[in-house]
Length: 244
Image (cartoon, rainbow, N blue to C red; front, top):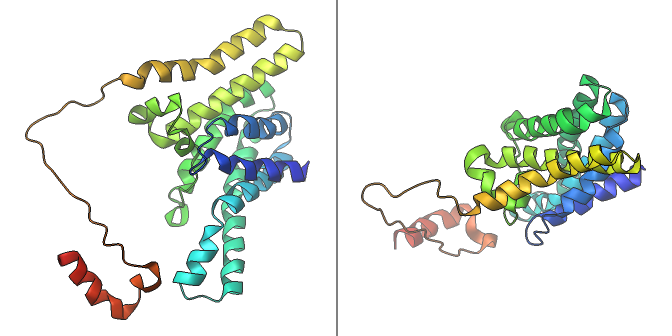
């Protein structure tokens, strides 16, 4: 089970660019929610950490390259630093699992309320604790999905929460379906589809209107090679390039 949890965490990265398979979290997180819905807080903590290891490990491995090539750190030390960082950040997923299972033992309440809420809280905390690392917030994976319509209202963490709500409700629908409780199953399945339907309806909503005189701005990218961009002796030439 540990290997599968780690693997599903790693696969979740496919939801983000350049792949942008925004439906992937529905599959991968259903595995995690399947565990969390009946777990004790300690097991939820452990499984959350394993999921986080796979998720962050495959999602931010590039840090090793940045630390080594552009930070001037030895490759081995950069690798160790990256592994330690991933291990610490994965603890936020542990917190979400522990909190959601500590608050209630009821699987329905866990899937429909506490897990989505704990996940949203976890992502928000991850964005500012110890200066923050908001990379790979689930909401960013939905930039091409109907859920993106909620961004002007709730922001990226609100989208993460809505996505987790949808997955939790979908999980409840499947559970009730296999328990032969068809009416309950249909209710939860409809609720799971509701955020996507509302997002689709809101896709063409105009949240802002032009006001006053328009202002034209430009963004300049001088295309200075990364290999020399941060060298001290390159500072003045870089500033001259921007001025020109």
